[in-house]
Image (cartoon, rainbow, N blue to C red; front, side, top):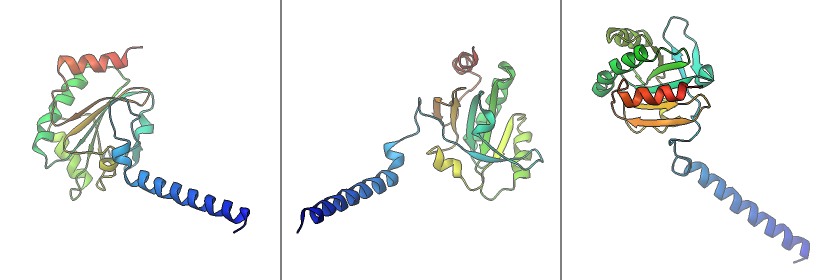
Length: 180
């Protein structure tokens, strides 16, 4: 075997090893790169239910503090938690705060999701992701799951399960993120 053939063999082996590592890293990306506090918030998409039927993403809230809730109409803890987001909205009236609840209902039409939310007295933005792409992007492990995203796009709080979002601690967190 010539020196050139040996080098080509070495290069081929290195390329194969790098390919295996890349495929393994992609397959294990959720374990290697978990969505945690301090991480950049992943992009998500949801269809608006306000009649415009457009798709909104995290980019639409650029420069805002976002309280992103992933929920479903069939989830009792989600329903229990919804009024606390509304109380948060009335306590923190800063226009740079966006409360966005993304419904992952698969078999419920968007107008029914909106009617359900309005029946709970909810006036903040409700989006619909019936394909549950947000579940994969945010590595959702249960419902409800909520993320507080700072103006710079980093996750500042991650909460699994229902919470009182109008509590003193949560209001203080939101106000601190809104401060100039």
